[in-house]
Amino acid sequence: MMRGLASFAITLALWQGIVALGLLPAFVLPAPVAVIETALKSRALLATHFAVTLIEVLSGLFIGAILGMSLAVMLQLLPPLRRYADPVLAASQSVPVFVLAPVLTIWLGYGLGPKVAMTVLIVFFPVLSSLTDAMDALPEADLDLARIAGASRWRSVRFLRFPHAQPSLASGLRVAATYAPTGAVIGEWIGASKGLGYLMLMANARSQTALMFAALALILGLTVTLRAGVTALMRRWV
Amino acid sequence: MTDWSIDGSLTLGPRLLFRGALRVEAGWTCLMGASGTGKTTLLRALAGLPVAAALAGTVHRPERIGWMAQADLLQPHLTVEQNAVLLERLAGRKADPDRLATLLGSVGLEGLSRRYPHQLSGGQRQRVALARALLQDAPVLALDEPFSALDPATRQQMQHMVHGAVAGRRVLMVTHDPAEALRLADRILILSEAGLRVISPPAAPAPRRVSGPQDWETLGQLAAAVAG
Image (tube, rainbow over all chains, first blue to last red; front, top):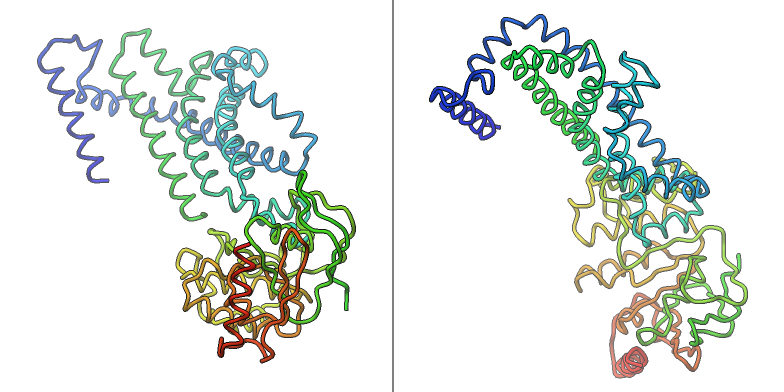
Protein backbone atom coordinates (compact mmCIF):
# COMPACT_ATOMS: atom_id res chain seq x y z
CA MET A 1 0.00 0.00 0.00
CA MET A 2 2.73 2.48 1.05
CA ARG A 3 4.84 1.43 -1.90
CA GLY A 4 1.87 1.97 -4.22
CA LEU A 5 1.31 5.46 -2.85
CA ALA A 6 5.01 6.27 -3.21
CA SER A 7 5.05 5.17 -6.89
CA PHE A 8 1.93 7.22 -7.44
CA ALA A 9 3.50 10.33 -5.86
CA ILE A 10 6.72 9.94 -7.88
CA THR A 11 4.75 9.59 -11.11
CA LEU A 12 2.81 12.75 -10.33
CA ALA A 13 6.04 14.62 -9.50
CA LEU A 14 7.66 13.48 -12.78
CA TRP A 15 4.57 14.55 -14.67
CA GLN A 16 4.57 17.97 -12.99
CA GLY A 17 8.29 18.31 -13.78
CA ILE A 18 7.84 17.51 -17.49
CA VAL A 19 5.05 20.06 -17.77
CA ALA A 20 7.15 22.65 -15.92
CA LEU A 21 9.89 22.31 -18.57
CA GLY A 22 7.37 23.91 -20.92
CA LEU A 23 7.91 21.41 -23.75
CA LEU A 24 4.23 20.58 -24.13
CA PRO A 25 1.36 23.06 -24.29
CA ALA A 26 -1.23 22.77 -21.49
CA PHE A 27 -4.00 21.63 -23.86
CA VAL A 28 -1.95 18.56 -24.68
CA LEU A 29 -0.76 17.72 -21.19
CA PRO A 30 -2.02 19.83 -18.30
CA ALA A 31 -0.03 19.84 -15.07
CA PRO A 32 -1.36 17.65 -12.24
CA VAL A 33 -1.80 20.78 -10.17
CA ALA A 34 -3.98 22.28 -12.91
CA VAL A 35 -6.01 19.07 -13.08
CA ILE A 36 -6.59 19.12 -9.33
CA GLU A 37 -7.56 22.81 -9.47
CA THR A 38 -10.05 22.13 -12.25
CA ALA A 39 -11.42 19.10 -10.43
CA LEU A 40 -12.06 21.15 -7.31
CA LYS A 41 -13.61 24.00 -9.28
CA SER A 42 -15.89 21.62 -11.23
CA ARG A 43 -16.57 19.20 -8.40
CA ALA A 44 -20.37 19.54 -8.63
CA LEU A 45 -20.27 18.80 -12.36
CA LEU A 46 -17.88 15.86 -11.88
CA ALA A 47 -19.95 14.47 -9.02
CA THR A 48 -23.13 14.51 -11.10
CA HIS A 49 -21.52 12.62 -13.96
CA PHE A 50 -19.60 10.32 -11.63
CA ALA A 51 -22.86 9.26 -9.94
CA VAL A 52 -24.34 8.28 -13.30
CA THR A 53 -21.30 6.21 -14.28
CA LEU A 54 -21.15 4.64 -10.82
CA ILE A 55 -24.75 3.45 -11.10
CA GLU A 56 -24.08 1.99 -14.56
CA VAL A 57 -20.92 0.21 -13.42
CA LEU A 58 -22.35 -1.22 -10.20
CA SER A 59 -25.59 -2.43 -11.73
CA GLY A 60 -23.74 -3.81 -14.78
CA LEU A 61 -21.22 -5.60 -12.59
CA PHE A 62 -23.91 -7.04 -10.35
CA ILE A 63 -26.20 -8.18 -13.15
CA GLY A 64 -23.31 -9.49 -15.26
CA ALA A 65 -21.85 -11.46 -12.36
CA ILE A 66 -25.22 -12.97 -11.43
CA LEU A 67 -25.98 -13.86 -15.05
CA GLY A 68 -22.50 -15.34 -15.60
CA MET A 69 -22.66 -17.46 -12.45
CA SER A 70 -26.24 -18.59 -13.11
CA LEU A 71 -25.48 -19.66 -16.66
CA ALA A 72 -22.32 -21.46 -15.53
CA VAL A 73 -24.36 -23.46 -13.01
CA MET A 74 -27.13 -24.13 -15.54
CA LEU A 75 -24.58 -25.44 -18.04
CA GLN A 76 -23.41 -27.93 -15.41
CA LEU A 77 -26.96 -29.02 -14.65
CA LEU A 78 -28.25 -29.32 -18.21
CA PRO A 79 -25.91 -31.22 -20.56
CA PRO A 80 -28.13 -30.62 -23.64
CA LEU A 81 -27.95 -26.87 -23.01
CA ARG A 82 -24.19 -27.25 -22.61
CA ARG A 83 -23.85 -28.98 -25.98
CA TYR A 84 -25.81 -26.18 -27.63
CA ALA A 85 -24.15 -23.32 -25.76
CA ASP A 86 -20.48 -24.35 -25.92
CA PRO A 87 -19.86 -23.47 -29.60
CA VAL A 88 -21.99 -20.33 -29.33
CA LEU A 89 -20.04 -19.16 -26.30
CA ALA A 90 -16.69 -20.01 -27.86
CA ALA A 91 -17.62 -17.99 -30.95
CA SER A 92 -18.97 -15.05 -28.97
CA GLN A 93 -15.76 -14.92 -26.90
CA SER A 94 -13.93 -13.81 -30.04
CA VAL A 95 -16.32 -10.89 -30.71
CA PRO A 96 -14.90 -7.68 -29.24
CA VAL A 97 -18.01 -6.64 -27.34
CA PHE A 98 -17.23 -2.95 -27.90
CA VAL A 99 -18.36 -3.24 -31.52
CA LEU A 100 -21.82 -4.05 -30.17
CA ALA A 101 -22.15 -0.66 -28.49
CA PRO A 102 -23.87 1.08 -31.46
CA VAL A 103 -26.24 -1.89 -31.79
CA LEU A 104 -27.10 -1.68 -28.11
CA THR A 105 -27.87 2.00 -28.58
CA ILE A 106 -30.31 1.16 -31.38
CA TRP A 107 -31.97 -1.48 -29.25
CA LEU A 108 -31.99 0.24 -25.89
CA GLY A 109 -31.91 3.96 -26.62
CA TYR A 110 -29.67 6.61 -25.12
CA GLY A 111 -30.44 6.22 -21.41
CA LEU A 112 -28.83 3.94 -18.80
CA GLY A 113 -29.88 0.80 -20.69
CA PRO A 114 -27.12 0.40 -23.30
CA LYS A 115 -24.37 1.39 -20.81
CA VAL A 116 -25.51 -1.17 -18.28
CA ALA A 117 -25.88 -3.73 -21.07
CA MET A 118 -22.34 -3.02 -22.31
CA THR A 119 -20.98 -3.47 -18.78
CA VAL A 120 -23.00 -6.67 -18.34
CA LEU A 121 -21.52 -8.08 -21.56
CA ILE A 122 -17.99 -7.24 -20.49
CA VAL A 123 -18.49 -8.74 -17.02
CA PHE A 124 -20.46 -11.78 -18.11
CA PHE A 125 -17.81 -13.65 -20.09
CA PRO A 126 -14.89 -13.67 -17.65
CA VAL A 127 -17.26 -14.72 -14.84
CA LEU A 128 -18.91 -17.44 -16.93
CA SER A 129 -15.69 -18.87 -18.32
CA SER A 130 -13.66 -18.76 -15.10
CA LEU A 131 -16.44 -20.52 -13.20
CA THR A 132 -17.17 -23.05 -15.95
CA ASP A 133 -13.52 -23.99 -16.50
CA ALA A 134 -12.92 -24.46 -12.80
CA MET A 135 -16.09 -26.48 -12.22
CA ASP A 136 -15.13 -28.70 -15.17
CA ALA A 137 -11.68 -29.17 -13.66
CA LEU A 138 -12.87 -30.99 -10.54
CA PRO A 139 -10.53 -33.99 -10.27
CA GLU A 140 -12.00 -37.39 -11.18
CA ALA A 141 -11.05 -38.73 -7.75
CA ASP A 142 -13.13 -36.02 -6.06
CA LEU A 143 -16.00 -36.91 -8.34
CA ASP A 144 -15.85 -40.45 -6.91
CA LEU A 145 -17.23 -38.97 -3.68
CA ALA A 146 -20.33 -37.80 -5.54
CA ARG A 147 -20.66 -41.22 -7.18
CA ILE A 148 -20.23 -43.10 -3.91
CA ALA A 149 -22.90 -40.91 -2.33
CA GLY A 150 -25.18 -41.34 -5.34
CA ALA A 151 -25.35 -37.55 -5.54
CA SER A 152 -27.66 -35.82 -7.97
CA ARG A 153 -26.14 -33.45 -10.51
CA TRP A 154 -27.41 -30.49 -8.52
CA ARG A 155 -25.87 -31.67 -5.27
CA SER A 156 -22.50 -32.43 -6.85
CA VAL A 157 -22.47 -28.91 -8.31
CA ARG A 158 -23.55 -27.36 -5.03
CA PHE A 159 -21.26 -29.26 -2.68
CA LEU A 160 -18.28 -30.19 -4.89
CA ARG A 161 -17.93 -28.32 -8.16
CA PHE A 162 -18.97 -24.84 -7.05
CA PRO A 163 -16.86 -24.78 -3.86
CA HIS A 164 -13.95 -26.21 -5.84
CA ALA A 165 -14.26 -23.29 -8.29
CA GLN A 166 -14.24 -20.52 -5.68
CA PRO A 167 -10.65 -19.28 -6.15
CA SER A 168 -11.05 -19.23 -9.91
CA LEU A 169 -14.42 -17.48 -9.67
CA ALA A 170 -12.83 -14.89 -7.39
CA SER A 171 -10.16 -14.08 -9.97
CA GLY A 172 -12.81 -13.98 -12.71
CA LEU A 173 -14.78 -11.46 -10.66
CA ARG A 174 -11.65 -9.38 -10.10
CA VAL A 175 -11.04 -9.24 -13.85
CA ALA A 176 -14.71 -8.37 -14.34
CA ALA A 177 -14.49 -5.53 -11.80
CA THR A 178 -11.46 -4.13 -13.65
CA TYR A 179 -13.23 -4.11 -17.00
CA ALA A 180 -16.66 -2.97 -15.79
CA PRO A 181 -15.93 0.81 -15.80
CA THR A 182 -14.46 0.50 -19.31
CA GLY A 183 -17.74 -1.01 -20.47
CA ALA A 184 -19.82 1.83 -19.04
CA VAL A 185 -17.50 4.54 -20.41
CA ILE A 186 -17.48 3.05 -23.91
CA GLY A 187 -21.27 2.88 -23.76
CA GLU A 188 -21.26 6.57 -22.90
CA TRP A 189 -18.91 7.41 -25.75
CA ILE A 190 -21.31 5.96 -28.30
CA GLY A 191 -24.22 8.11 -27.23
CA ALA A 192 -25.04 9.70 -23.91
CA SER A 193 -25.92 12.97 -22.24
CA LYS A 194 -24.58 12.01 -18.82
CA GLY A 195 -21.67 10.14 -17.25
CA LEU A 196 -17.90 10.52 -17.08
CA GLY A 197 -17.42 9.15 -20.61
CA TYR A 198 -19.79 11.79 -21.95
CA LEU A 199 -18.01 14.47 -19.89
CA MET A 200 -14.66 13.42 -21.36
CA LEU A 201 -15.95 13.76 -24.94
CA MET A 202 -17.51 17.11 -24.16
CA ALA A 203 -14.35 18.43 -22.50
CA ASN A 204 -12.33 17.12 -25.44
CA ALA A 205 -14.50 18.98 -27.95
CA ARG A 206 -13.99 22.20 -26.00
CA SER A 207 -10.25 21.63 -25.46
CA GLN A 208 -10.78 21.51 -21.70
CA THR A 209 -7.98 19.00 -21.31
CA ALA A 210 -7.66 19.46 -17.56
CA LEU A 211 -11.34 18.58 -17.09
CA MET A 212 -10.83 15.52 -19.29
CA PHE A 213 -7.95 14.40 -17.13
CA ALA A 214 -10.02 14.97 -14.00
CA ALA A 215 -12.75 12.71 -15.40
CA LEU A 216 -10.11 10.15 -16.37
CA ALA A 217 -8.67 10.22 -12.86
CA LEU A 218 -12.12 9.53 -11.43
CA ILE A 219 -12.57 6.54 -13.77
CA LEU A 220 -9.19 5.17 -12.72
CA GLY A 221 -10.04 5.73 -9.07
CA LEU A 222 -13.35 3.95 -9.53
CA THR A 223 -11.65 0.98 -11.21
CA VAL A 224 -9.00 0.62 -8.53
CA THR A 225 -11.56 0.92 -5.71
CA LEU A 226 -13.91 -1.56 -7.33
CA ARG A 227 -11.14 -4.11 -7.80
CA ALA A 228 -10.00 -3.67 -4.22
CA GLY A 229 -13.60 -3.98 -3.03
CA VAL A 230 -14.20 -7.20 -4.94
CA THR A 231 -10.87 -8.60 -3.70
CA ALA A 232 -11.79 -7.82 -0.09
CA LEU A 233 -15.24 -9.32 -0.54
CA MET A 234 -13.80 -12.50 -2.09
CA ARG A 235 -11.24 -12.91 0.66
CA ARG A 236 -14.03 -12.82 3.19
CA TRP A 237 -16.15 -15.24 1.26
CA VAL A 238 -13.56 -17.72 0.04
CA MET B 1 -26.80 -58.95 5.23
CA THR B 2 -26.82 -57.56 1.68
CA ASP B 3 -24.61 -59.42 -0.70
CA TRP B 4 -21.43 -57.65 -1.79
CA SER B 5 -20.16 -59.55 -4.78
CA ILE B 6 -19.16 -59.62 -8.39
CA ASP B 7 -19.85 -62.42 -10.81
CA GLY B 8 -18.53 -61.98 -14.32
CA SER B 9 -15.48 -60.60 -16.03
CA LEU B 10 -13.50 -57.40 -16.39
CA THR B 11 -11.59 -56.87 -19.64
CA LEU B 12 -9.34 -53.99 -20.54
CA GLY B 13 -8.90 -54.04 -24.29
CA PRO B 14 -7.55 -57.49 -25.16
CA ARG B 15 -6.57 -58.20 -21.54
CA LEU B 16 -8.71 -60.19 -19.18
CA LEU B 17 -8.26 -58.69 -15.70
CA PHE B 18 -10.72 -60.83 -13.79
CA ARG B 19 -13.12 -63.64 -14.40
CA GLY B 20 -15.13 -65.51 -11.86
CA ALA B 21 -17.11 -64.85 -8.74
CA LEU B 22 -15.97 -62.95 -5.68
CA ARG B 23 -18.06 -62.44 -2.62
CA VAL B 24 -16.69 -60.11 0.06
CA GLU B 25 -17.26 -61.79 3.39
CA ALA B 26 -17.45 -60.48 6.93
CA GLY B 27 -14.21 -59.14 8.34
CA TRP B 28 -11.27 -57.56 6.60
CA THR B 29 -10.25 -58.73 3.14
CA CYS B 30 -6.99 -57.54 1.58
CA LEU B 31 -6.69 -57.56 -2.19
CA MET B 32 -3.11 -57.74 -3.44
CA GLY B 33 -1.25 -58.37 -6.66
CA ALA B 34 1.43 -56.99 -8.93
CA SER B 35 1.07 -53.50 -10.37
CA GLY B 36 -1.34 -53.34 -13.30
CA THR B 37 -3.17 -56.59 -12.56
CA GLY B 38 -6.44 -54.73 -12.03
CA LYS B 39 -6.83 -54.73 -8.23
CA THR B 40 -8.13 -51.20 -8.15
CA THR B 41 -10.37 -51.87 -11.14
CA LEU B 42 -11.90 -54.83 -9.31
CA LEU B 43 -12.38 -52.78 -6.14
CA ARG B 44 -13.95 -49.89 -8.06
CA ALA B 45 -16.28 -52.24 -9.91
CA LEU B 46 -17.40 -53.69 -6.59
CA ALA B 47 -17.92 -50.17 -5.23
CA GLY B 48 -20.04 -49.26 -8.24
CA LEU B 49 -17.53 -46.68 -9.48
CA PRO B 50 -16.76 -46.24 -13.17
CA VAL B 51 -13.83 -48.26 -14.51
CA ALA B 52 -11.87 -48.14 -17.74
CA ALA B 53 -12.36 -51.89 -18.14
CA ALA B 54 -15.51 -53.42 -19.60
CA LEU B 55 -17.63 -55.24 -17.04
CA ALA B 56 -19.63 -58.24 -18.20
CA GLY B 57 -21.72 -59.75 -15.45
CA THR B 58 -23.36 -58.53 -12.29
CA VAL B 59 -22.30 -56.62 -9.21
CA HIS B 60 -24.35 -56.78 -6.03
CA ARG B 61 -23.67 -54.18 -3.42
CA PRO B 62 -25.38 -52.51 -0.49
CA GLU B 63 -26.87 -49.12 -1.23
CA ARG B 64 -24.36 -47.38 1.01
CA ILE B 65 -20.65 -47.93 0.63
CA GLY B 66 -17.85 -46.30 2.58
CA TRP B 67 -14.95 -45.14 0.39
CA MET B 68 -11.38 -44.24 1.21
CA ALA B 69 -8.81 -43.66 -1.50
CA GLN B 70 -5.05 -43.15 -1.50
CA ALA B 71 -5.63 -39.38 -1.59
CA ASP B 72 -7.74 -38.03 1.25
CA LEU B 73 -9.96 -36.11 -1.22
CA LEU B 74 -10.52 -33.35 1.33
CA GLN B 75 -11.94 -30.19 -0.18
CA PRO B 76 -9.55 -27.34 0.61
CA HIS B 77 -12.25 -24.70 1.17
CA LEU B 78 -14.26 -26.76 3.61
CA THR B 79 -13.53 -27.16 7.31
CA VAL B 80 -12.87 -30.54 8.94
CA GLU B 81 -16.50 -30.72 9.99
CA GLN B 82 -17.80 -29.76 6.55
CA ASN B 83 -15.49 -32.27 4.90
CA ALA B 84 -16.65 -34.99 7.27
CA VAL B 85 -20.32 -34.43 6.38
CA LEU B 86 -19.63 -33.99 2.65
CA LEU B 87 -20.78 -37.48 1.64
CA GLU B 88 -23.95 -37.11 3.70
CA ARG B 89 -24.65 -33.76 2.03
CA LEU B 90 -23.97 -35.22 -1.40
CA ALA B 91 -26.38 -38.02 -0.61
CA GLY B 92 -29.02 -35.50 0.46
CA ARG B 93 -29.01 -36.55 4.10
CA LYS B 94 -28.51 -34.46 7.18
CA ALA B 95 -25.83 -35.52 9.61
CA ASP B 96 -26.74 -35.61 13.28
CA PRO B 97 -24.45 -33.05 14.97
CA ASP B 98 -24.03 -35.11 18.15
CA ARG B 99 -23.07 -38.19 16.21
CA LEU B 100 -20.63 -36.14 14.14
CA ALA B 101 -19.00 -34.70 17.26
CA THR B 102 -18.69 -38.16 18.83
CA LEU B 103 -17.26 -39.61 15.65
CA LEU B 104 -14.71 -36.81 15.20
CA GLY B 105 -13.68 -37.34 18.82
CA SER B 106 -13.33 -41.07 18.33
CA VAL B 107 -10.90 -40.63 15.43
CA GLY B 108 -8.82 -38.16 17.41
CA LEU B 109 -10.01 -34.94 15.80
CA GLU B 110 -11.55 -33.37 18.88
CA GLY B 111 -11.26 -29.57 18.84
CA LEU B 112 -10.15 -29.51 15.20
CA SER B 113 -13.58 -29.34 13.60
CA ARG B 114 -13.19 -25.72 12.45
CA ARG B 115 -9.71 -26.21 10.97
CA TYR B 116 -9.05 -26.28 7.25
CA PRO B 117 -7.23 -29.20 5.56
CA HIS B 118 -4.05 -27.19 4.97
CA GLN B 119 -3.78 -26.73 8.74
CA LEU B 120 -3.69 -30.49 9.34
CA SER B 121 -0.98 -33.14 9.20
CA GLY B 122 -1.19 -36.01 6.72
CA GLY B 123 -2.43 -38.38 9.40
CA GLN B 124 -5.07 -35.93 10.59
CA ARG B 125 -6.26 -35.42 7.04
CA GLN B 126 -6.66 -39.17 6.55
CA ARG B 127 -8.63 -39.29 9.82
CA VAL B 128 -11.06 -36.77 8.38
CA ALA B 129 -11.40 -39.06 5.36
CA LEU B 130 -12.06 -41.94 7.76
CA ALA B 131 -14.71 -39.93 9.63
CA ARG B 132 -16.30 -39.03 6.30
CA ALA B 133 -16.45 -42.72 5.32
CA LEU B 134 -17.79 -43.83 8.71
CA LEU B 135 -20.44 -41.16 9.03
CA GLN B 136 -22.36 -42.74 6.18
CA ASP B 137 -22.99 -45.74 8.37
CA ALA B 138 -22.43 -48.08 5.45
CA PRO B 139 -22.26 -51.83 6.12
CA VAL B 140 -19.27 -52.19 3.78
CA LEU B 141 -16.09 -50.22 3.12
CA ALA B 142 -13.98 -50.10 -0.02
CA LEU B 143 -10.43 -48.93 0.65
CA ASP B 144 -7.95 -48.19 -2.12
CA GLU B 145 -4.50 -48.04 -0.49
CA PRO B 146 -5.69 -45.55 2.12
CA PHE B 147 -2.49 -45.67 4.15
CA SER B 148 0.14 -45.70 1.43
CA ALA B 149 0.79 -41.95 1.51
CA LEU B 150 1.44 -41.88 5.26
CA ASP B 151 4.79 -42.10 7.03
CA PRO B 152 5.43 -45.51 8.71
CA ALA B 153 4.61 -44.45 12.27
CA THR B 154 1.41 -42.65 11.29
CA ARG B 155 0.49 -45.52 9.01
CA GLN B 156 0.61 -48.05 11.84
CA GLN B 157 -1.37 -45.77 14.10
CA MET B 158 -4.02 -45.25 11.42
CA GLN B 159 -4.22 -48.98 10.66
CA HIS B 160 -5.06 -49.66 14.29
CA MET B 161 -7.55 -46.83 14.47
CA VAL B 162 -9.37 -47.85 11.30
CA HIS B 163 -9.36 -51.49 12.30
CA GLY B 164 -11.06 -50.62 15.57
CA ALA B 165 -13.47 -48.15 14.00
CA VAL B 166 -14.79 -50.44 11.31
CA ALA B 167 -15.27 -53.53 13.45
CA GLY B 168 -18.42 -55.38 12.40
CA ARG B 169 -18.38 -54.10 8.82
CA ARG B 170 -17.17 -55.84 5.71
CA VAL B 171 -13.97 -54.30 4.41
CA LEU B 172 -12.21 -54.78 1.10
CA MET B 173 -8.82 -53.08 0.89
CA VAL B 174 -6.36 -52.90 -1.99
CA THR B 175 -2.80 -52.76 -0.70
CA HIS B 176 0.77 -53.16 -1.92
CA ASP B 177 2.19 -53.56 1.54
CA PRO B 178 2.65 -57.21 2.69
CA ALA B 179 3.13 -56.11 6.31
CA GLU B 180 -0.13 -54.20 6.21
CA ALA B 181 -2.01 -57.23 4.92
CA LEU B 182 -0.40 -59.41 7.56
CA ARG B 183 -1.35 -56.94 10.28
CA LEU B 184 -5.00 -56.42 9.29
CA ALA B 185 -6.37 -59.13 7.04
CA ASP B 186 -8.80 -61.87 7.94
CA ARG B 187 -8.45 -63.04 4.36
CA ILE B 188 -5.89 -62.23 1.69
CA LEU B 189 -6.67 -62.43 -2.01
CA ILE B 190 -3.98 -62.33 -4.68
CA LEU B 191 -5.08 -61.19 -8.11
CA SER B 192 -2.96 -62.33 -11.05
CA GLU B 193 -3.44 -63.35 -14.64
CA ALA B 194 -4.09 -66.87 -13.39
CA GLY B 195 -7.06 -65.65 -11.36
CA LEU B 196 -7.72 -65.14 -7.66
CA ARG B 197 -5.67 -67.02 -5.09
CA VAL B 198 -6.30 -67.08 -1.35
CA ILE B 199 -3.47 -66.83 1.14
CA SER B 200 -4.27 -67.41 4.77
CA PRO B 201 -3.05 -64.82 7.25
CA PRO B 202 -1.76 -65.95 10.66
CA ALA B 203 -4.36 -67.35 13.01
CA ALA B 204 -3.94 -64.66 15.68
CA PRO B 205 -6.70 -62.02 15.77
CA ALA B 206 -5.99 -58.80 13.86
CA PRO B 207 -4.50 -56.27 14.27
CA ARG B 208 -1.47 -58.44 14.84
CA ARG B 209 2.27 -58.07 15.00
CA VAL B 210 4.66 -59.91 12.77
CA SER B 211 6.24 -62.57 14.97
CA GLY B 212 7.94 -65.85 14.34
CA PRO B 213 9.27 -67.68 11.29
CA GLN B 214 5.80 -68.68 10.10
CA ASP B 215 4.86 -65.01 9.64
CA TRP B 216 8.14 -64.41 7.84
CA GLU B 217 7.19 -67.11 5.42
CA THR B 218 3.75 -65.56 4.76
CA LEU B 219 5.40 -62.15 4.30
CA GLY B 220 7.76 -63.65 1.75
CA GLN B 221 4.87 -65.27 -0.07
CA LEU B 222 2.98 -61.97 -0.20
CA ALA B 223 6.04 -60.02 -1.29
CA ALA B 224 6.58 -62.50 -4.13
CA ALA B 225 2.92 -62.16 -5.15
CA VAL B 226 3.11 -58.37 -5.20
CA ALA B 227 6.32 -58.48 -7.22
CA GLY B 228 4.49 -60.64 -9.77
